[in-house]
Length: 149
Image (cartoon, rainbow, N blue to C red):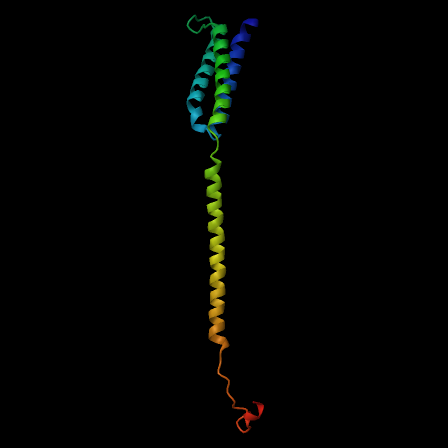
């Protein structure tokens, strides 16, 4: 039973590295994690073959379980350290994102202001056309209006 512990832990570490790579693919640095994912999958397959090698009588599948465990352990350390190295170096460009947000906000406000300005201009035009009329004194034709001066 103890001979299965090293291949089992190597398979576990390789699977954890593969799952971490899958998780990191969906982060901002996703393109950097494609090659480590393939390497992790190959290490998972090597761990599976070492487990099957212990269970099968064929000498072709037999590998050194300690070597497989050490390789999986160091690969998992590489994946974790690569993650922290990328986290420090490949950051979100906040200046470009803030500039893009400010530009979109300015365009939105400009569109609303233009709409409001066009509405006011149309209202002033209608008031200018409809508000002026020439007063007529048709009701007061018989009266002398000079007495009000």
